[in-house]
Length: 129
Image (cartoon, helix red, strand yellow):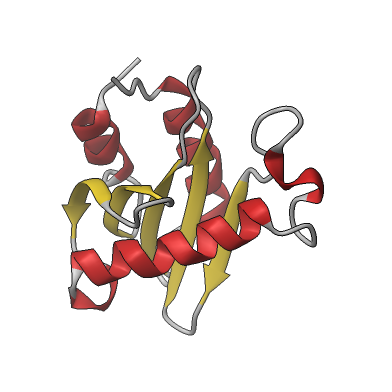
């Protein structure tokens, strides 16, 4: 089990990691950050990624039932650009929360499959509290 800062430090050790954040998709605020911010502005990156995470978690096309049944229906969202990967991993908690990990990877240096597996492990071990 690890706290926010330790989780983000560990995420930044992944090959190609450029930045990591824990974001609340309800407010669009970053609860913690490490490394660079996508687009150069951490507040904007958190707010924009929160919109995407909220859409995927709440809209029936991506999440039948809107997450009302058994926790979060969506595990993660992956965005690929010509130069980067953005991986948004939802964090399930024992209390009602709306947080996700956002990992920004350099496409040439990062390994998306490895990052997805490690981020899932980090999300599972993360202690919010």
